[in-house]
Length: 234
Image 1 (cartoon, rainbow, N blue to C red):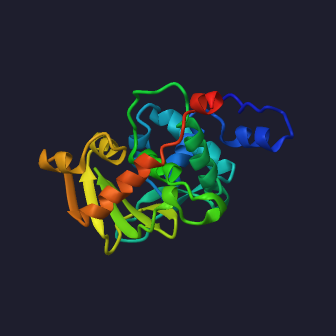
Image 2: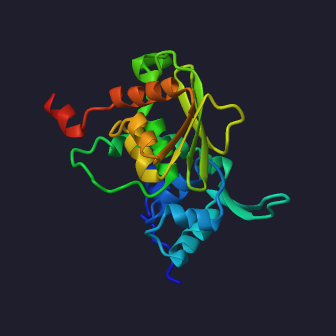
Image 3: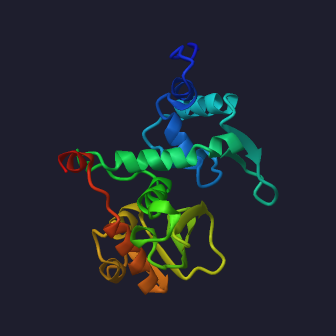
C-alpha cells in the first residue's frame, strides 16, 4: 500500500488537510457528525465510494484519532463508527464549509446523496443573528421539536433560543413529524414544493403541528444567503 501523501507544511491548515483532506475523508466525517453509523449506513450515505476505499478512509481516520469503532450493547451488538471528541470539533467547520459552498455562483442540479447532508444543510441555513441574539434568521421565536424520517434514517431537529440542532434518533415528544424519501424532503424543506401538496400525493407523511413545520420552512427560505457572485457585485 502506498504511503499517505503529506503537504510537508507545518501550517495548521496543511496539517488538517493531511489528516482529513483525502478524497471522501471529510464526507465520512459528515456522515458521523450527527451520530454513530455502521459501515453499511456509511456506504449508503456515500454511494459514490467503493467499499474498499471507504474501509481505507475509515482506517486512516481511526489511526489519526478522528473516529473510533465501538460495539453497541445488547440487544443490538452491532459495530459502529463514531467521531472522537477531537473529531466532533470538526462539526462547526463542516457546517461553515457547507454554508460557504452553498453560496457558489454556479448552481448545481446534483441531488443530495444522504439524509445527513440534508440535515446539516438545515444547520448551515439557520444562522444566528449578529451578537448571538435571536433574530429573523434565527427563529423569530419558534420553539419546536421535529421528528424527521427518510428510509432508515431518523433525526430529532430542535429549534429554540435562536438555535437549531440536529441529532440522530427519534425525539420522545415531537411537536411535528415528517417522513418521505430524500428527494421529497429536500424539495419540501427548501420550499420547492408545498407541504400540503406533497402530503396529498402520499409522498410525504406529516403529523402534529403543521403550522410549526411551515414556519420552519419559511425561515429556511427567507434566510437564503446571497451567492458569492452577488455579494461581489454588491
